[in-house]
Each structure stands twice: as structure tokens, then as C-alpha cells.
Length: 345
Image (cartoon, rainbow, N blue to C red):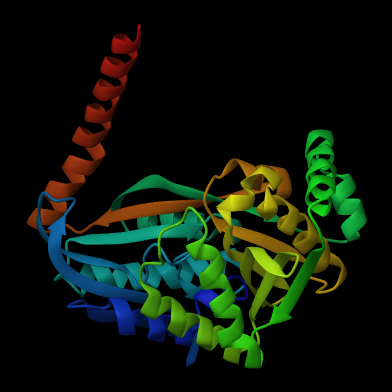
């Protein structure tokens, strides 16, 4: 019922993530029901660790890390007032009944569907002090109701010219082929090609490879995982991984053989992939997930922010970190900016 970002909020995503990253953290999963029907799930965990490398604190945070494109409460309600009511109930219990925590760290909340706004309003209504901070941007192409050709024609003149020029130069080198396929029975084959191209790229070997393998096998089983390749004379020179779920394409990983960098193989593969997604896979949204790489603004013009919220309990350490993060840290940042500007002058 929550709808958006389903692959990264479903039970199996959390199950796989916890298998590899839970460590010593304890589960802190809350369920809010209304008339016996679940309306809110808070997928959280509790850690006892140094917060911001300052002092140990009891920190409640979302189940997730840098592999999570977003982290969020999961709602069974669609209307904003109902979501706020559910969050207020959860925060009220957290404040009045569950006392053994200091920090509530809500990182990477999505801006869309007012989820971050609902969280801030609910915390304020319950009298819980908090600070808001920016995490990163997510770039999307939404409401796709045009053809792949129309989409490419809508890119900048310079980008279209560059694609034509690079394509022509690469075709002078030999036979250029675009391939897109489901993982399925070709999972090991496609993963092998991806690792081979990555080995010839500028990127280091994947960290957390065990997690990524489990995640990709699960996505393959759901029919979501897809690969795209660009071949030159039968040699794969660029590779792209994506998930397709609920009419949304999540663009995950891309690599290219740096031997062919002069041809911009990833740009060429992306131009073919985007039209394929629009014309063949009929997606309504293309999501490049986290990051502000310059190319994303050219291909996916809609920006969505990911917001972080730190809430503070009334415990001694909670009050200490509230003063530290709300009062002293902003002042320190302004002083550093002033010193840097003065030094540059």
C-alpha cells in the first residue's frame, strides 16, 4: 500500500540487509494499528555507540546504510493527515513510554509524498526537539508519456550532437551491438560479464560483494533484475544494472572499459537504454537513485531531496546532543566558512 520505492522497503530487502550489516544492533521495529489494521511500520534498530565520535549514546535509526537509496517509515495510509496521526502516535509512545534512548536518527527520508514533512510536523506536535539536514539529491524522469525518440530529441543540442559523434566514431571501429536481458538463467553469465567489464574499468572491486550478490539473486527471483551491455566486435565495453518494479526503473550500477573512454561508452549505452526503457519496457518513472553526478541533470531533470532528521530525547545525553547539534555545530560551521572565505580573499 505504501507504493513508492517498494524494492527498498519490502520485507526481503530488510532481511538481506540485516543478514550482512546488523552486527550488534538490536531490532527496534514498531507497528501502529488503527481498528486492528496496520497503518505504520517503523523499520528501526537500536545501537549503543559513539554518536558523531563524541560520546556513547543510545541511538535509534532506520535499518539501512549507503546501499539504501531511501530510508523511510512505511505507511498503509495515503492521506497526509492520517500519516501525521500515525506518526504522532508512534512519537508519543517513544517520548512517554519508551525512555531508554537518546537519539532518533532518521536519515534519507524522501521529500516526495510529504514523508519528511509529516515526520517534522509530528515531532513538533509531540514537543520533541529535532534538527533537519540535507542528505543528498535523487534525480528522476517522471510521468513518461512520450516515445524514446521524443525523449532524446528533448535533450540538449550539445548532448545529442555528442551522442551522434561518439556513435559514429565507435561504429568506425567495428560492429556495435546493444543487448538488454533479464537475469533469469543467465544470472551467472551476466554477472560474469559485469565483473569482467568492471575489472577493466577505473573502479575498484565491489565492496560488500556478499550483500550485493544476495540482493541481486533475490531481485532476479522477483523478475526485477535486468542487465544492459554495449558490445564492440563481440567484446562488452560497457555494462549497466537496473531494477524494474511497479513501472519504475531504478538505475543501479554502470561501468565501462576505460580502454574505450574516448568513445564515452557509458553515455552511448545510456542513450540506448533510456529509449529501451521508454519504448520496450514502458516504465512511467526512471530513477537514478542517490547522487548529484552532473550527467543525471541532463538525462533525468526532476530533483528530489533526501532529508535527514535528528530527534533528541529529554535524557541527559539527549539534551547534551541537542545543544551540541542545534547550537554549537551550526556556529562552528559558520566560523569555518568565514575563515575559508577570508583565506581565499
